Amino acid sequence: MRIVGGKFKGRKLVAPEGLDTRPTSDRARESVFNILEHQTWGRAALRGGRVLDVFSGTGALGLEAFSRGAAHVTFMDKDETAMKALRTNAKGMGASDTMQMLRIDVTNPPTSTAPCGLVFMDAPYGSGLTDVALQALEKNGWMAKDTICVVELSKKEKWDVPGNCEELDRRKYGAAQVIFFKL
Image (cartoon, rainbow, N blue to C red; front, side, top):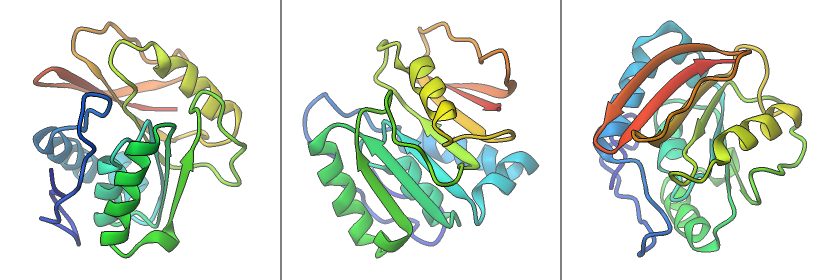
């Protein structure tokens, strides 16, 4: 696993052993960021923006966003082993002052001081946590009107974009599906 683009392209990322963390594949991540960088709505949310990586695991999505120009990234995950890998990965990029790492239950986040323009959400497949987390994040100020959300689910999962949102794109990569939408 590595950073696939931007300032830190090629930098290797560490991941905890075992089945509890399932990082987004390099191929899928590269495709997601190609879409973001080639769409006006994605480029504007990514470059110089505030990014939130929810159920972050190793932090691959948020770190990729940082490598490609995000000004600030907040990571949320409750697994200590994953957070340890994330801290190692962030330290290797020398960016800890522009990153915030919260070891919390994502379905009950603290109140945000400012909304993020881009949110990555990769809940454990089949957990049913995506909708609960989205509602909690919006309620607590992590997302606002025009926030771009990128949700990864198992391609077997049926999921509809919330009614107050606009679906922008939907793709399948191996066992995953990725849905882009705007709040």
